Each structure stands twice: as C-alpha cells, then as structure tokens.
Image 1 (cartoon, rainbow, N blue to C red):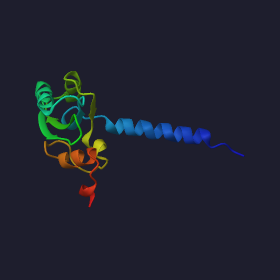
Image 2 (image 1 turned 90 degrees about the vertical axis):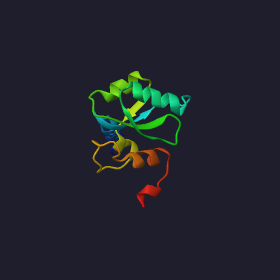
Image 3 (image 1 turned 90 degrees about the horizontal axis):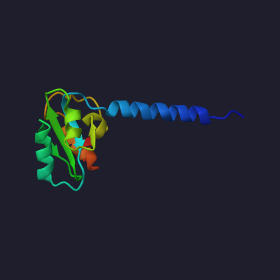
Image 4 (image 1 turned 60 degrees about the vertical axis):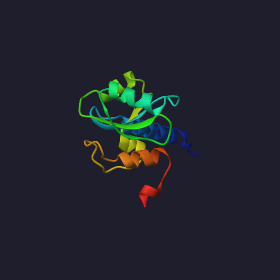
Length: 122
C-alpha cells in the first residue's frame, strides 16, 4: 500500500509557505499592527505616530490597530516602535479583492475579522 505521508507533508509545507507569503505587508499603504496587549490605546497611538504612520482604526482585541502610511518602510518602522506582528490587512481579514493603497480601504473588515465578528460577510 502506498504511503501518502510524504504528499501530505509537502502539501502542508506549501500551504504554510503560501500563507506566510500572503501575510507579508506591503512597504507602503495599509496594514495591521499588533502591539503588546498590556499597552493602553494612548501608548499604541503614540507608537504609531512615532513610526510616522496614521491610525485608521483600533481593533477590539488589545493591541490591534490598522495603520496607513505612504512612506516606504512602514513594517520596519512599526516593528521598531514595538509592534510584535505587522500583517497585510487582506491576509488578516481573510478576504481579498480590496485595494490597499488608501487609508480607509478594508479597515472595517480587518478590525471586524480580527475580533471574530462575521456579520460583515452577509
């Protein structure tokens, strides 16, 4: 009998790699930043400003923020300001098709998906 374990392992590795590639944020535009949960909203806003970015929305989960900047290198600046994760908002929201070059694009969807609210899909 043929073993399917190598095929399952390879398929799993490819799927994980694709998810990691999709989650990479662009150099400019909108992205989701996740700061440490112990920070209050004022500290998060201050760190976003220090990264030369604009706040689009704060999420319901502690530390979650959707930010925007047209200056290249935003993911690096957010990480330097203390963000633990910086993700593409389309990957964080779990849906595609929105343009990510404007500040308000897909912010509602990213925040709603991050807090687990599926009502936006109706």
